[in-house]
Image 1 (spheres, rainbow, N blue to C red):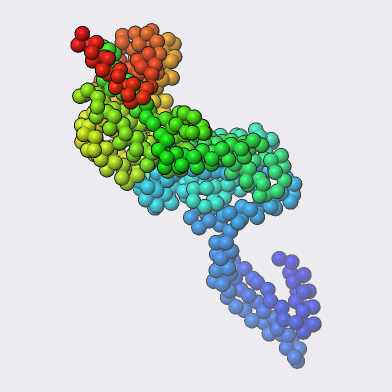
Image 2 (image 1 turned 180 degrees about the vertical axis):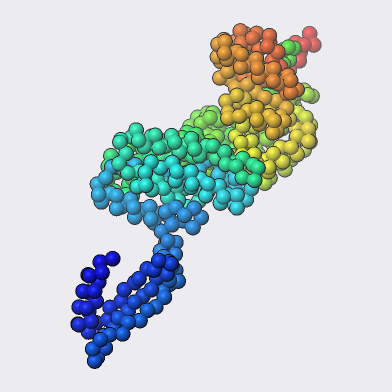
Length: 488
């Protein structure tokens, strides 16, 4: 403090007959308000007031207005304020829009206290990911975050930060002996190239985020001028899906699965198709992600279960029907009821139904999901782990939840003539034999591939060589033809 200046200002105020008040911060943390009031006969009266609690309350109110109460990160208002200040200085900036992947599963499975704990952990990891004290990470609300990176050296610096964030957030969060897995997706806009004002930059970063999430999870995307069209297309797709569900535009096709040793068809997988009057025949890869994000996968999946079981009721006894189910479906409260209802209405025994899940279903170690799957399995329903070998930790999932079948992903079969790939396939087949799990190879297209699988001891095969996906009536004719040829 400038003592001489303070004395001069106080003397001038008193000589002018004006009261002067100043704050004094003491070494013990207290704050005093010192007021000096001139007296009529000369001199002055000084009063000392302890305003420590008042000042702390004001600071708390100011902090609450600018910081998130859960994570103590800057909030939306504070982030916008910092962004406006940075843009006024014409400093190069990178604006990141971030959104957690699979966060809803944590809340649905373990409750909001676990979700809050996870958000605080994510906030801490994001804070430590920043390059310098000048960069800002904020929580905008829910599982949405934003980052302001100062003076990036073009897109390279921003990309390095994005990769670092994806890597650190993808690591498990351990709490009370359980591992929680979430991912994070990022959209990035650069100033001044991607916008000259804050609203445009934030919108473009959000658009890049939305574009990235529509392609997958754990991704980052830079804004590109054409992304607004992509976002509009995705929104149109979701709207069309909702209409299609009401109009019953979806159909199922069935692809046979054969026992390699006997050549007998032992089952078929139900594959959903969307027969859109405007889009034509749409494959699942083009609309399932949108159905999951919008929640439409729940009623759509329930319809598929009922339809698949209804068709399978007309097949020979023992023929299994495989139906794909997503994590979103299994987490819904009525999933087990819908499965049991589909079996009851169709009359198909539980032992003939296979539910195909992917590793993402088991990634969260969700007790609700695992409990539901165990209950269904106890009824005799088989559980198959699809796309085996392409995920994070397949062996860990087999240890945690014993399945009845593993399906080797088609990418391995396509490359099976490669020595290393063939070794992986043989290892998976051997693992299945050791654990008593049926192994099915997907994507079998040539006799050479089938021969390799036969020699390796693979139990089942599925793919174009075995049979193309076909309508229910065509599948029924194929089964009748096979049955007649065996009798002959």
